Amino acid sequence: MRFTTLLLAASSLALLSSAAAYAAEAAADAVEGDVDAVVVTRLPTEPDSVLGLTVITDDDIDARQAVFAADLLTTTPGLSLSRNGGFGGVTTVRTRGAAGDKTLVLVDGVVQNDPSSPNGGFDFAAFDLADIARIEILEGPQGSLWGSDAIGGVISFTTRELNGWRASAEAGSYATLRATAAGGIATDRFAIGGSVAGYRSDGVSKAANGTEDDGLESWTASVNGRVDLSDTVSLDGRIRYNEYDVDIDGYDSFFAFGDTPDRATAQAWSGFGRLKADSFLGLDHTVSVSLYDIQRDNISSFSSSYEADRATVRYTAGRGGASDRFAFVFGAERDDTEASVSTGATADLGATSAFGVVRFSPVEPLTLSGALRYDDPDDFEAKTTARISASYRFGPGFAAQASWGQGFKTPTISQAVCDFCFPAGPSVGLKPETAEGWDLGLSWRSSDDRLFVQATGYRLQVEDQISYGAGRYVNLDETLTTGVTVAGEVALGQFLLKANYAYTDAVDETTGARLLRVPEHSGAVSFGWRNARFNALLTVRAEDEQADSNPSTFSPETREGFVTADLAGGWTLSPLIELTARIENLADEDYQESLGYGEAGRAAYIGIRFRN
Image (cartoon, rainbow, N blue to C red; front, top):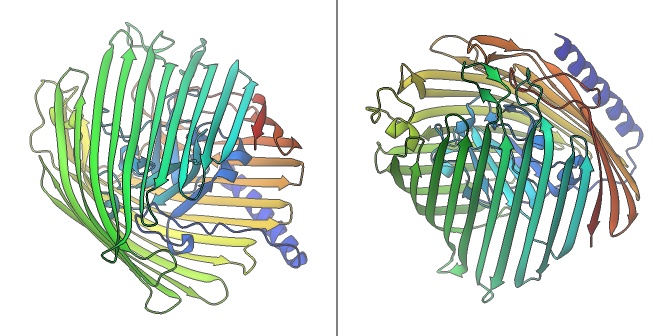
């Protein structure tokens, strides 16, 4: 109740006061809008025509002084975060209430979901943003666009191509140090560049009842290159490497949860090479090869090691761009994945797929799109998924959108070989999870791009969800999520206000219980100010209570709601140098993202940025 009252009051007051100021200052200069095409959908699309989309830009990352991806995703409407302790605890993101393994994560189009983990999800714990220029979050089932795993949605990261250089250094609470450096040369026909980032912190205890610090060390590096061989043929490629070493807490010899000397380490790299040939036989063609490799080790009384690699070959052909009335893409891909799990067992999974996407605007205000995909896994039944959507712009700045889509998720290698099963042996009769969802949205954007409001309602149903029980993996659960998200922003000269709210009703239809770690109410408000030399941004985030599981007793309990605030600011000394300062958890809130796991109290950081 405290959450709802506080958030609604803060949001209403901020929006009303800003709307009044907007009306009073209608003659002020307009701010530049984000008109970049959305590419996560496989087909270049105008942002306003995509429902359930959130775009986080390079400027947003800089303003928040965000270090890790989770720092930004926590304030995105429709997403909820689970973290087993600050500073490197296992971190998963749920999209529209779906479990974390049902969100597909991409970096430069390369799938990052870990094939060696039990559920095949992605751990955001040490995903550094130093080389990231853009994040696109597309909610709702996207199986027809991206195949398996995209039931809840897709989170796509695009790395930066620089023409120049930049560097930064930061230090602060918990003996935290971070440094980054990047540089590159980019012209119309050629580009080459690289980036490196290092981070270390003593951290806090992962167990909320613990007393010892659990630290984190991580390194991230990336390189990129691009060359135009002719006016119509080009080559490009990127490689990204990340490693981390994190202290974690676990269970002692008496199976009590608390301080332990356990550690987790991981080394992962991904990359792609791509050949593009435009206007050949009337189509734009792309052939790409992407690779992903990860090795993880859990070091404890029950140590275990995991390895996995994935190779994907993809061909696409299409015609048309974001501004064309008619555009389409079709293609095919082959995916081969191999993984070893805790028992040392090794297995492989593969799939051959074909897909097509089309977008058509029969009249100027109406945009229709459809997608169809056929996936044929080597070891499971084939699946066909579809998606249709419509967007209609009417009146001064108003737009309505609707979409319906399907998704699916094949069993992971861990589930197929039945890792952690008793008695040991492969799973029998497992089949892919399936999903269906729809959403409706209404938005309004002012003619000068200074005011934007959007409301979206959605429904997502997952069937044959794979669960672990009685020592085996089986298709048991059915889940249903319905919800509403509201987001808005107001730009007033040097000021920018953003606010969002999400209502999420996520239940297990088999038992009627609420899904774990999905708050019913959540939201965020940010207020930023910038002039020629100074900038500041206050971000307030709130979450309602949520169903959870006590790591000490394994019994269902409720994690209390919380409100936190962060303040970031910068002082531009010259075009090349900026001093930065940031306070996280401004009110020193004692809170937990996940029940039983510790988070940092108030923390302060200062830094310096160089760039040309």
